[in-house]
Amino acid sequence: MTARIYKPAQNVMQQGRAATRDWVLEYLPDEPRVIEPLMGWTSSSDTKRQIRLTFSTKEEAIAYAKENGIAYRLEEPPATKIRPKSYAENFKYGRPDSWTH
Image (cartoon, rainbow, N blue to C red):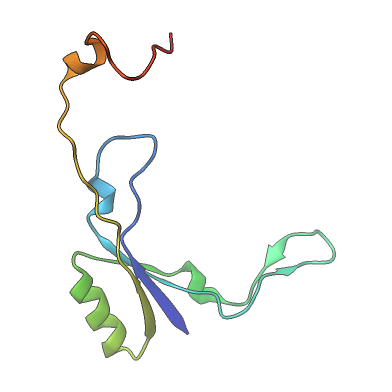
């Protein structure tokens, strides 16, 4: 039983970062999914895949895993750099990108 601790990625449909603040602990699959022969649906007897715990800090997630004897894999998020940009830069003369419309 191994868990993965990570920070979720930003939603591609929105600019907000509200859903990326928390750390998530998810269990990795112990066994592969099986295709049911009658209907062709995929199924698994591994019910831990349905558990998704959220923590406000990375240390809380690691402490929970250690406290409960769960082996974990920590995935650090890549460092993002916010480049301030004004709206007027979209219309400046000599911009490097061509217009798309």
